[in-house]
Length: 456
Image 1 (cartoon, one colour):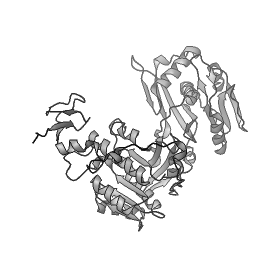
Image 2 (image 1 turned 90 degrees about the vertical axis):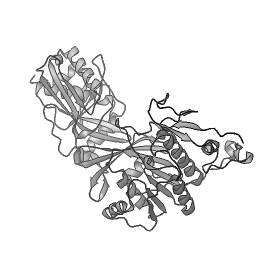
Image 3 (image 1 turned 60 degrees about the horizontal axis):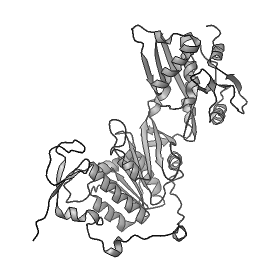
Image 4 (image 1 turned 180 degrees about the vertical axis):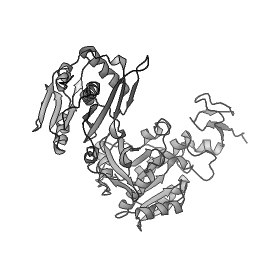
């Protein structure tokens, strides 16, 4: 009888070796190699149960486009408007979706609410591999959830999760979370490793596509606030959503970074309350509730997905007490603020290199748009001259390196939102084509900005 060969595989990067190695030469991790039994090696190219495929089963089936039938399946709506809008209109049957975010941000709470709404019309299964069923029941009671179509399990073995789902044939399966799920009962690998995640994600993806069952999973993030993997799960799933927290009002933002069935960069807003996550359909009314334009404050507009957000930009310019002036920026790219300050210093001869500059976006939001350039420049000048900008005004324009104020692409959408909330003045580029009943104050270059500060 031929001697069976034993191999070793790294748990982190799946590098294989014929002998055990202390440090993986591929990913440089220590003590990450595990022994792979011969049966495991033989089953590597087989089905999920480790059985060999026949030549007929292994043969690829080729089709032309006219031979492929499309079943028009309606999306499963939850009537949670913010959730449905971010997903593109609801959950697509057979889709594979991941929700990730910081620990304690509310991922499990949100998915439990989604499962409750889906279970009103369809059967759903919620697998909790991180929490006990008693913990899940306590949260369900707090959320007022009691659906006979919603089944729960604390099973963490992927083989048994898939088998149970195949028997019950639910419309949706929720797995919380994939990092705490192991592949089989006899698996010696540690859950959460890259090799485990790769195989678990692949099997769940094939399960969803072949059976038309929507699969929603939660995932952990790294200290860099990226999905643990890294990027492995993002490539394999149909949609990736981040649940993020903001400083004001316990706000939660559901953000789409990948969506094969809808728009990316779409956002939805929720309030974290005792009864769970409550959707906020009109976030700008909260953002503008306590904003007053004082020296150093400017109102800007940022478009997130299909939604314009009216945000307060705050700047503080003070004489530097040190040899090296400070630049402390929150919510905006620091290089963007430094660039605007350099443009003002170049053309308006304001010695910002002798001043400390502090800039932040109120509410803890993060903005990555060039359309707020004018707002940054006006906030810096307002703090420097200690004069407030015109009341009920919003700045929407870009600033070029040559000192020109340039139009933006989505100004009309921002102006429409500004009119809705009673803003009276629009600060924008001279060549911007807009239709508005508000007073328009336009600028061709940054030299014209000084006209807003007559007492300088």
